Length: 188
Image (cartoon, helix red, strand yellow):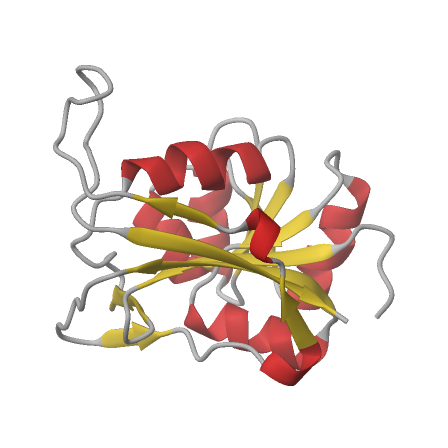
């Protein structure tokens, strides 16, 4: 499927590729990744996500069009009541996203959505934040990575965040529990 807007994926993992424990995020807290990486990249853009990711968010993210892929009519109704846009398939979500404002369509997960996008559409860029620690737990959800032979890392766009205590950048700052590195992979 050709799209007018490029499709990018953005993901945060631990060093073992863990992105979640069932419907819950791993225990890390890297405020800088969210505030200095995720927000500026995705603001004003359509975000496509699976239902577990949407459930973990609880509500749509401000300043973005949040599209949830679910086949369940009951879940779709619940998500719409919370302000999400719903689609019954990833293809439908992409078609909806094409019509919304924003220059990039972002896939924000979870595991099955990352895999589907890698297998079915041309993902132009993959932005991977690797938390430099291991977060083992029950019901691990993994990010299986990318086909490195199809992407080149853009080192000039890499970012690193240092471990730091909460409150160092203001009273609402939750700090960084671990070091983190953001790498941007661009498709050839």
